[in-house]
Image 1 (cartoon, one colour):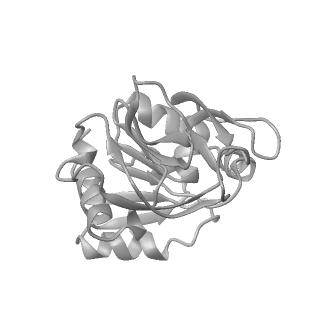
Image 2 (spheres, rainbow, N blue to C red):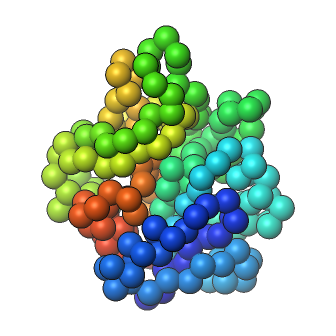
Length: 204
């Protein structure tokens, strides 16, 4: 199976492509509507501002395509900004609506609760649900983070969480076959490769 990587032209995809090559996974990088609609497995990466990302999705007319893939239970993985775009909204640079697949809002870390923004570096994740995406990943494993905005989900979709000093937040969420991770698995060494391999092995 070929994994489709959605190219919003907002990310350096080198690390992700390198990681997929390491696990011998075939992939296609595209933002073509037809090819995205035919995806059997879709990765939505992203670096940058929420508003720019959601506007890019709408400009490419891919917002409805992604929602339809979700309804068809096609596996989707949102990474960092990609995860946030799948949420209900974000207050980054003003209020912007997301795709509402994860029914929660993205907010900026508070200067009163955290010492450093953005949250950057290696953090342990506390696994709350044993899901297929996290198979063979040990609880309290380290993953690499780089972000200033976060999602604090309810127990219904929250699968793993971590914290930035006094602020705990969701770092793995799941709704049907749509998953979101706040960290960068492509930069998280062995456990990141395991997670990507788990995702690529999911079936519709």
